[in-house]
Image (tube, rainbow, N blue to C red; front, side, top):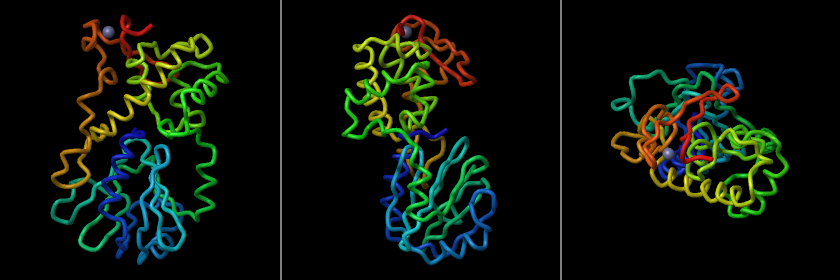
Length: 269
Ligand SMILES: [Zn+2]
């Protein structure tokens, strides 16, 4: 599932390409992806100009020129493609927006959604999200305080969007590996030094992932060699049995609260 760095990559690349463009035609191929009857949805977005593209946690927000917002969550399997009839992917899209000469394709939105809201409704939908891990105002002290209120398991807490917003299965493991801490540790058992290194690792890992374009499998547009560049840089996630890059010990894959978890039994304490 796309996480903060993947959505941040989309935000930047799409923002550069579609800000100021008008949705000349909208098609809804799968009505369940949107929150209105297809016809009503189309009528309300067609002819609207995209004012800006914003990211909040794992969501993208497309602000339209009539004070409404399209709220996108890709969930599991969703991805975007920006192209044309000639270079589009050989995959079904659930929604498509024609933006002058280009088309924005919303793919894989079986579990994900693209909902149209007023600004107030959208703010309400996002109201219970925890702080953004990279928010400059979210200090190491705030992080320590936030976690000191929790009693649960480290990984489960890191991926809880009400606690922190934007981290999911992959980056929680990468952060724990970077910090040298086992993801199944109980939060109250973490020392203040360990909390400080988790905070530092959270910044290091997320910033590196953003710098390399996240781990999305598909390019956003034809010739896009940036999106997905972090995929091969993941050090622990989805590398079960591979030797740990630090110490060579085989990486362990287990299940933790019905999520996959990967860790090095030697480097992580
Ligand atoms: Zn190791």
